[in-house]
Image (cartoon, rainbow, N blue to C red; front, top):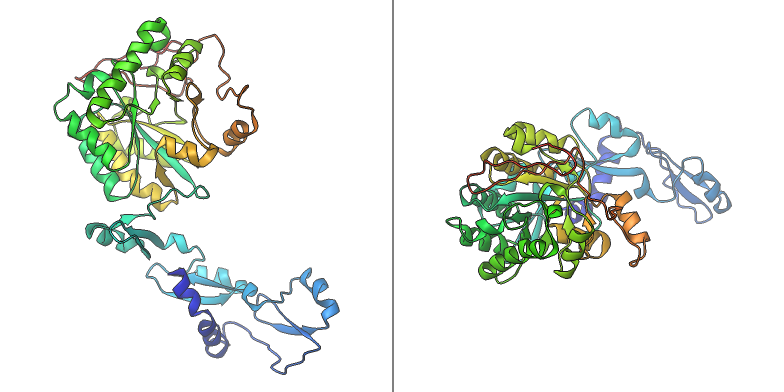
Length: 398
């Protein structure tokens, strides 16, 4: 649509110049003079200067390209108008905006790979007819966040979440408990659906045991048994691991490295396990979200899934791509490393990660001492009844 609107740019300029002289002042010397350079001001004025003066005039607000002094503005009904930049604030008062993406959303047809920019009010109609949000690809130059879900699968709630993700061309990462993967009714279908729509299959250990309290053999079993169960269903094991309570130490890192598992923490804790309130969880995210966040949810709770279903289009409308952790790692730093700990992909973090050498990189600053995700990051323990609680090694929190 931007291209279409751009094609009518010259016609729109003519309309402005001829039909809106009372609104946009135009003072153009129509007499051609090859010895002069015509320059333009943001309020529509033009003046001719000697070529030797052109660069100096640019420093005081003149432009040698007419397109530099005009801009297209849109209204939420899709109508547009081309105005001089000096008049932008006046049209903003009438409901116009220069932000095209605040009015339109991109949708694509997975069957034909056709893409369109459509009014946000029309997006649902396209979704109902088989289209998806976005362009079907991860754009490394655009903001992105990861929705992550712990303690499942719980088909009663997870299935609703997967439906919303699929409808909105969004993906998430699911950190699952190995003892539920095979034992919960409907778990196989749920996991295969995750895989089919492009979500990431992650491990949250076999039974939510705090890994820092285990010896090496028991620790390996927690990870490997979970991977085996996921692999038996989906034909692939977990690609990432989230340790219960966010607790890890060098032994956990070493075992994860040997089993090809990056360690994923989080930067936004929704506290959904504590509040069990969809509105609160929704606001906890929207009030603080930024590019590179990893957001912690638990898909075993109905209010959590309700909040996530609301968040998916809200985050997309705010300009965020919803990607998996591995997709974000690939886009931001070229990929995740087994045994390394990732809490977020903020610009500051990415800079540190990309500037450090592979031999000395320590993304979390961990040492032989036990580590946890922090006092604000609480990870809910659950069994199949979703009722048990655990304690963090560094802080009793949930």
